[in-house]
Image (cartoon, rainbow, N blue to C red; front, side, top):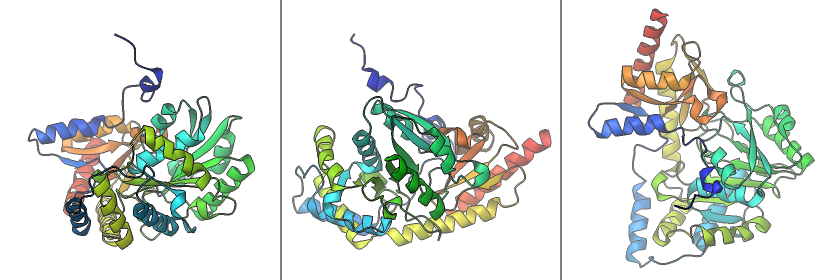
Length: 393
């Protein structure tokens, strides 16, 4: 039979996605095994009732058809309003491209700024799709790791040292997945100075901007000289409790958003009609935003309290987002092996740090997408596991 294109084969060259432990545990749980799963960043509660009702109404009103490729006008206006809140920069609808989730926005951003043979810098730890997104554009990339000892705050000098003659973009994520690190104003400022000096695009994944636990979120788009060179990735998945609805958007200068409408033409052909109308109302009314953020603040605090004092584990980052990262290198340098062992011994599924790059090797990520009592039980099982490992050493 004919061969696949190199483009498709090279998106995930190893054939591994980093989610192997999650799907293995999910299969076992669905078969009836009693497991605690703290792997995926998917809410354990439904989308706010008002959003669901708005979607039902849109269906009854006949919103069953094709939509504008860039997003319906009401949705783009609502996204522009929220982008202004997120980034601190006045935003108009023509600076918005509605996409299929945050991943659709990330894909559009990389496709927009990188040709085949170009180079990007990815700050690690990173969300698991980042490398594949550059691969899909035919671009190479260098990962610059933010160190756990620095709370996963990036070293801008190291980023500068990784730039090449064909570097077109730097990709950052704050609040960060997986670490929960919220980059400081000074770090963002230094990154912006570097981008202006080297005439680079800055792709800023700000999907978790509402989950900061009181730590100020700083968008690079708000800093001098950056509005024309920053592409902000955003989504309703985490902030509005809408993971399965697949609604995201890219914010950027109009000169780059307009050509990207063509990318939607040949990929998604626009968003779902009735979902678009419901999403616009959810954005206009901030349905669920404050409540969801408060829920994760409570859960983070409860888990951190429950895990406090555990010998052999240390919390790293974890100021925001929906996760807590634990440094387990005192037990094992291989977070992947430890995560599989925890699954077998404690019936607890967590994500190995290696799923998010080498910066989190020897770490595990705890998803806070479970009730407080489940998180407390997970902390108890982790403490029990670590105690047994230390006793056997």
